[in-house]
Figure: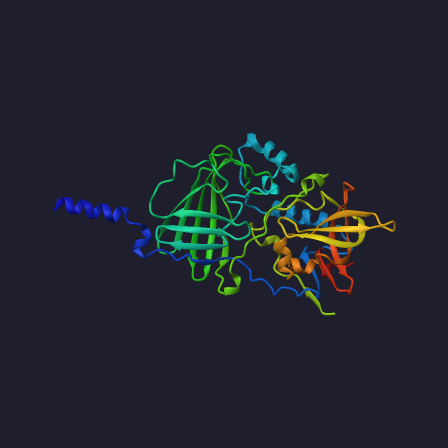
Length: 259
Length: 131
């Protein structure tokens, strides 16, 4: 009798959380804007990448693009806080971002810079995150297993997930390499980085928020701004293969402007 | 000729981190060096982070010079409705753009105009800001 009870208790503890059926359903394409119809060959098209307040024919639009993005980031109140001894390094990397940012050379932006997945496929015991813009994927076990000990450090790290309440998934990511930045302004990190991602679904809106812990370089954890992603309901929004990344620009970069 | 004009759609700059990281155009191209090139499109390379067009330009003596031109990224182009088929592979075109700061045979392509007069322009700015 006692033995049977212990076995039952073990089963309860080790059963995948998904089996409880009280977990959030994250299946779907999230935050991906519908595409307009393709322009027929032979038809004229004129389209401007929006640069508010910049005359497309009179202003230096190249400089305006850099200025607007740099100013927007500078004005954003929520930035990672580095240890004082590392501020000079952050500034130097930022000043040379145009040639030093690893993402410029077709390397993955990595977690968390790559942002939330564009599609989530949820199965009992694991989730698959698909990143349509870069043809990348992540596997997130939710069966209670620990981080794996046999993997090399990587751009997207090693993920394990657990469900919290009826509407939230929490993903714990470790084992990163240090070949990614957290953002364009020289925000480097160490291999000790740990990222906690929270996915909370309310109706057809998924809120994504990442928190970056890196005691080697950050003075305190960086809680990124939450992002809201709308569930796509159009079959036309199915992810397509993204073009590969082929870098031709590096030899032509002659000045250090960046955006 | 039917003109499709997409206005200020939701700002791509704020669309999120899924866009690939881009080099600064200002670090490569000089807005004060506008350039016009006429020739044959030998290849359209539909890749991230920027689409490339390769153009063979023949001078009066018949000598051919090969140019490469960078455009916006493929995701931005697609949001304008533009696909690879709109970039005229094999066709004779005139391209307006801006020369590279390093003066190599490399430029940013602003507009491609075809022999029948239709054109594809992918550019940056705000029409409301005209001076």
